Image 1 (cartoon, helix red, strand yellow):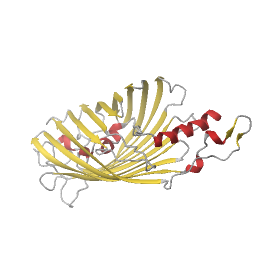
Image 2 (cartoon, rainbow, N blue to C red; image 1 turned 90 degrees about the vertical axis):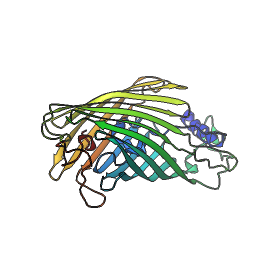
Image 3 (cartoon, rainbow, N blue to C red; image 1 turned 60 degrees about the vertical axis):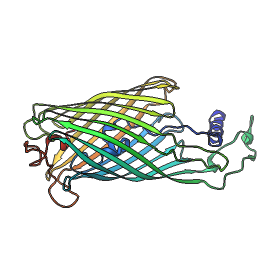
Image 4 (cartoon, rainbow, N blue to C red; image 1 turned 120 degrees about the vertical axis):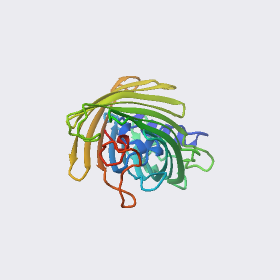
Length: 361
């Protein structure tokens, strides 16, 4: 117990250091939270999509980390160059809740057609960050007795503020492509978050910049036996979705690679997550879920994934549980017109829409 309390002191000392280095929450199923990693994915597919994710990391520890993420984006091709608009909310607690983070923002993307079967998007996001601390939940070493525990008054003087508000910005780009036969589609993206490294320090005498994060990712969807439209979840075709994402933030490099499979609405996946640099770690993640089509061009998906710690100092922490719920309203449009794309008529889900403009996984 004493060791756990002393950790609180070390955590506070981090705020007083010249630089506070940390990493954003990393979701195992990054394909379910594309706007979180890259604003260029806003409106990448036509229609309205809402995604809700919950992650519980290291549940065996007394102080686990819980994170909630909600994002929604609307893509339409009613105007030339239009990509989409979106909003997102991310909140998490560090430890037992004495440190809480809130990120609320908007994203927007413009679309640049390259050809009938390829296009690019450039996106930006503007958000408001809030970090709050409950100083009363901390126990400091000078308040501890070796025999009786926490019995003394601490000499620590609390900062005047316990809430820190700051603006934050991110930019990104993505390339989307596919073929007329509807047998494959793919995306490649590059983004940078916390562009100006906002100061999150509670102390006026110190700086604690939120480290800039670089993200590069790519994924493909191969459809075997498609017969009734590129994005129908419950048809008998097999969908194979390999992907990879690389992140660099505050000296920590991490990579995730793996694939998801879908047939008759059943989803399964296997992923490897590794970090290297100042800290080495290896995780094997298992995913399972189910997707169903609802009348009215609506799709519903539910996924669950579990991170199993394979190597590193975090063995025995309980890994992580992650749940995602995705709703696709494929007919939604920004201006109330047709959601159809301006590509050739290839018999996709919407007449006149190129097949890779409608999400297939």
